[in-house]
Length: 139
Image (cartoon, one colour):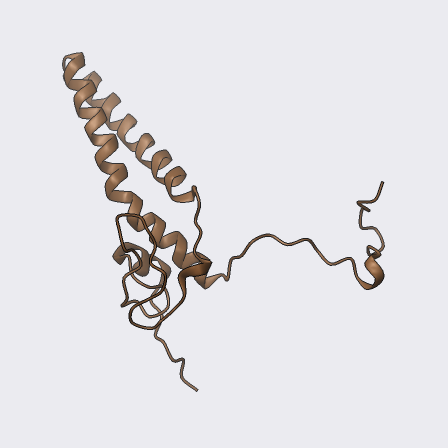
């Protein structure tokens, strides 16, 4: 039995900012606002909540790369401080804005593929008694 959807890889869906199930529908309605559902396959995007993950990964990656390039440029070319500030700030802001959408889309695709959800407490078994060796929360 063939799958009803030929799902793209999470990286492909993320880089193209498309639906993680069909790879055709748009994931965003605005710059970073996730749509309610896919316009092509109808997938409900209610599961999608990457929170601050995209911002953290983008700021960390861009910060490391831009700082390394800036340090090399500052030592090799000895530009004036105003030029260093201008170039480094434009590079950081520009790179963050360029990378934020695809990283957010990639994390949403990963959530879909791995069926990520909110954390849940483990069941204590019958009658609320924890399994042997399981720490009790009662005091």
